[in-house]
Length: 106
Length: 159
Image (cartoon, rainbow over all chains, first blue to last red; front, side, top):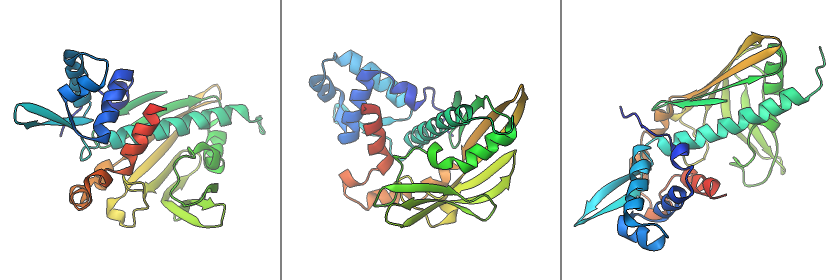
């Protein structure tokens, strides 16, 4: 079993990494393509991709001399991140409601 | 609030300033306002979400047109300590009719003293949703093949 070193939401906390991830969600891309599309140097893009990869959000495949980055749709990392967000929001709503209502039986 | 994630489960913990009986009661009776509304499998807006307070019951969304979507089976209802329900929602955010492919959510309430309650939530067996995923993905056109949550995920982080 794989254990990811970085969780999905931490990995996506950085705006540049979010922008990179969104582009990969739309279509698999090579490092050079991402560097051309974004105001970020190629080494910086590589560094961000490394974090996304460690979080289990993307994987890469060789294509000739390039490496193409894909969203890891088979992995559970994005599903986990999505559900984690869902429940974090639900429990935050719960806390707001339970602490706001009058204490009927107090 | 803390979060932790293993491969196939999510854990979230929160402590609230309310006694345990009340925490349990509000969680189930007011689940309608606790559940994030953007998660909707009906074709119309949700009028309300109902948490049936007994084992064998369901959690369901009722649409403004009266249609219903049952997306969880209540497996354990043990006030004021524990709730367990199935998560019958596929990664494509559709109702999963095969119980073998559903995960489950357990919520434990623990009195912490001073009228506070700790709530531990575990959403586990996420890998059960994964079976058959790949073949399903291969059967559809590339740009339509991604699980729906990926799009919502991208939308959410963009907002």
